[in-house]
Image 1 (cartoon, helix red, strand yellow):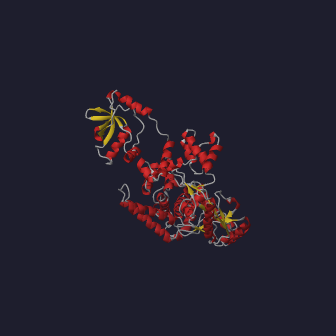
Image 2 (cartoon, rainbow, N blue to C red):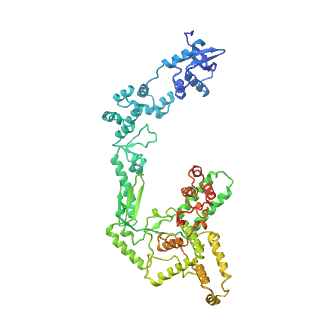
Image 3 (cartoon, helix red, strand yellow):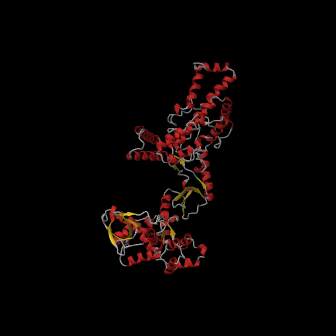
Length: 622
């Protein structure tokens, strides 16, 4: 094999890659090498063989690629003189193999220490990063590793500690602690996570500690708190070193919240500062009365819905809303949800007999449990309720809202749905004289034969005005519903059968067979059903228990009378509830494409999927 002994310079644009280079894999990243060449020059020459007017690079492919990148980036000219050693073509494979086999890579420990030396010599992290083509974070990480206790660092150099273990030990700069944890752990307990946990057990993990998440990093740092960062867990929020300071900050913030709750007039307010859930079974409860949606709020909701519908119509052919329109649609959705979600209000007479717990939960947010009654105050609350019952005042339901079918529906939507259910019950009962007789007898007997009871009631309003309670105010558009269309049909049929003049009705009835009288009674009784739930009604009030009993007796299936549309349901609930409806109604499980849709598009898709599904929200399934 013939070679030239001297190094010659060849213009970069006269060099080409050789297919004879034995390195086929590895060494693909050239960013760091290009930066090094730009900063320090080409330290090692290339090995080439001549082929016509060009020279092929048979050893130094990464260096050649880095030079070409620098030329492409205009950091060096295309004719940059490259030092090369020229060899015979016969020896190219042997030379390439020798360079790649004989060369031994630098141990990472040497690199870590070299970076530390550069810093000691006054070079900044930024300069080191630029000159070696790495991120500043990488420089910091390598310096952190170089700062591990010298004895442990030598174990790493000897391959008795691996890189993951070294990174775990570097979570603290305390050499004594590093050595203590390493030496005290048997081999099988030297997993990186175990080492890291042992070194940080006296610190506060900001990612998991509820107090840290509650107080927040800014407040902790502003109060002089110190933070230890783990440079090797890039998503980690750090370890807080001052546990006492954090405890004080959390207590002060909880006390501020408790002070606001005390101003509401409760008999007592206690702070529960741990993440352990308090035993609420030790208390009984008083419940808020839900404030009804006022005519003013209902008007605001309808105006927003009209604006929403206009925007949808104006942009029905657009794949996406313009940014300003998209922002406005999100605002409208939020406003409608806020207007529908009217807060409850506790009785001013009951508040002085009950209290509240302010609790810090595991996710770092506070939970406030109002309306808790201690055992010693339970009798006073019961006496107050008895006095109210005697005066005919309504009591809210006793169950927790989390157990209710309508727990995640707005008061306005509950009113709407129960209005549709009432219409359907009227339509069905109007053709069921057997059940109508039972319902009428039940309602009248409760009034005539029993002492006043507030635990049992009828859902009939037998003394109501003509046609029963109007449902129009409770559900927009209900006049076009299938149930009211059926009632209108029955009404027209009876008008053709009974006398035209009211004064002739009595004699007509005396002349009819009993079956006709019973049918007429069923129609009239059906019109007295009143099971609309207003926002201030308790969901388990006796009237609604009676309504459930009646619905079961007449085998009411609301799927015959109601379908989910934008107006009746889908446009009035959150996206997660729409997706849940699709999943229940169609058995679809992969909803990721639907989840990415804007709400108007999702509502339209849900309408199509659920149109023939007979899906019902839980509130209408009974």
